[in-house]
Length: 144
Image 1 (tube, one colour):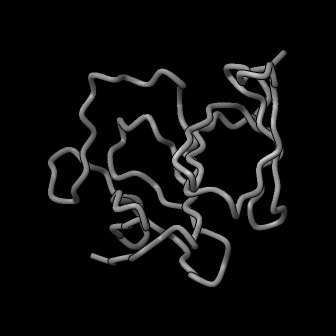
Image 2 (cartoon, helix red, strand yellow):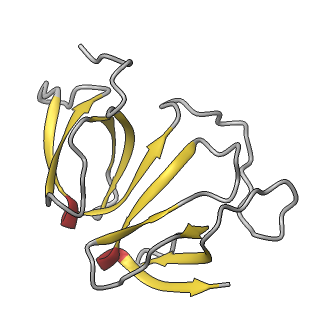
């Protein structure tokens, strides 16, 4: 049973490098210290598994979310020119993944030699709190 009062609990939507998406909760995600972490699945897999171990290097990105359902009707702001965005301090960036997907956000620390980096959404109403981007899945980072 998941205890929602635990402050270290992270709700995650994990995008794997192969395109699969997994939703779950992690209590031990620390990508700069551990290359693997555990995910308690929101929905069991076809074979009945309720948890899995994931290796960070096999992923594309990990979206730390406010809620799993989110708001499918909400159109989040994608560009820095959109009205109503609130930028945190940091470097504005557009990330293009190797599969062609693009996301915008603010990066505090960027070192392409590290396993990844944190990207913070530009829209305060976005369901994503932050995104851990895996470096080997990035085609290009444009600072704007």
